[in-house]
Image (cartoon, each protein chain N blue to C red):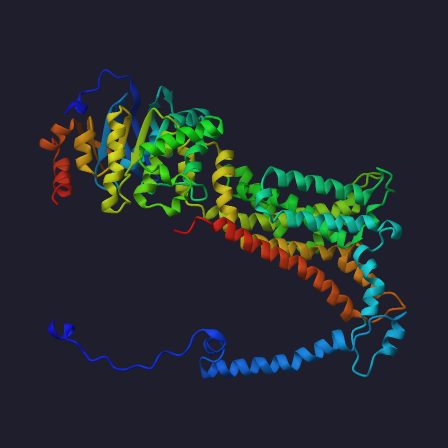
Length: 254
Length: 371
């Protein structure tokens, strides 16, 4: 349980204070308060429609919050485009549907942002990209197009693509939900490795095994609120709230 | 369960009918049912009735040389054949029109340059900055050759530009400017900024709602009335601008179709990587959107190419204009069919090329997409 040490020594990387969001009349996020410290691994779970994805997408402003404060890596997210782009450079995101660029090869997917956003020379970007492909164990796929890869391979490319920007924080939005069961493990393995290297991570996922292995903090959301948070031991052994208990019984039943 | 695995005697079967070889092909494609057999026979009958007379008119009974129209008609038999002598006499005028006769090597060279540029665009190895430079150099050469006034070439007024070079200039310059303008309009129509969106929508709907002829008329007749006296804009330029503005509105809507087909996830992935709006648009959105709309894009290009023939209405002599002028010659009256067959063949060869080119592009862009 070495990786579950309380990381309170770290500086805060993400601070969300009294964050609210509405879609029309629907209150999607209600008074969200969350602090993620450097190197902390937070796993967010909850029933579908509970606002997990919306919350994580607010952190790099793919969704806009309407009330409250979000400070990421010391930069407050407002409508200021410069701040948003600066934040996004430091925050990597992995999506449920991979969202690789189908018209570019794997290598081009990886080098695009380093070349255009970080302004790296092409050969340097290539080198970094190949080293990350090595780490996600698909160096031989560099010149293929995403459509020629399996789902698990595509998701690993997507992780590598985010890592090429050398982000401070990685966000995972249900990274294994669109995968066939036999491919989930290869993606989770990569994520566990990343966690062990000390990456600050926020993962929305239903993979409770993964959560037990890597999480420092479990967050349970329901109906747009954070209902419960705590260490995984606490969270799985004696959940405080009735809603958490119900959710866990449903998800761990089979 | 038992009777499923029970062994049944296999009946002897005759082999299926042949499906390859000439006989097999005929059977599968032309005579595979009573109805199709009837259709095939009808089609054969139709071809037998129409093809021989066309060949007789165009080749067998055709007159290849004659001093004038009278002689041509006199030389024909009762049936009447094509008078290609008319084309032989007038081809140079049809192609280059009123451009000074002694200088007509210049428009000829212009046509050669255009064809060379178009062929060069087919070579994938040249794609990119080099091709753009090649086109810019080519267009500069076209300008020098047509206008003259430098390098010892005599100056030729744009009112004398005519025939095939004029058609090609209208089409190529029109598409070259209308395409980027159309992209901007399409992006504008999907912009988050209300003013940009309103202007784009207003422009597209206004221009699409009026016939090209009225736009050309406005450009050539009305515009000068509004300009201060003594201030004139070249008539050719006015028509060219009218073309660009018109084609851009159509292209914008085609491109918008492609933009709308891009999944939101692509845009989010680009945003999440920190790409700005223009980087995202240029690197992620447009390459995918444009590849998706190649068939309707080329459709619009072909339409624009043929629409250039409408400039005849404001007194410019494009390819169709020079043909009409050639037909007005009192010595050679009434050879409409010959003239229009030739013009149609010229238009067709350019359009057919565009269509083949678009198929090549589609193949090129779909490489690696299929699983």
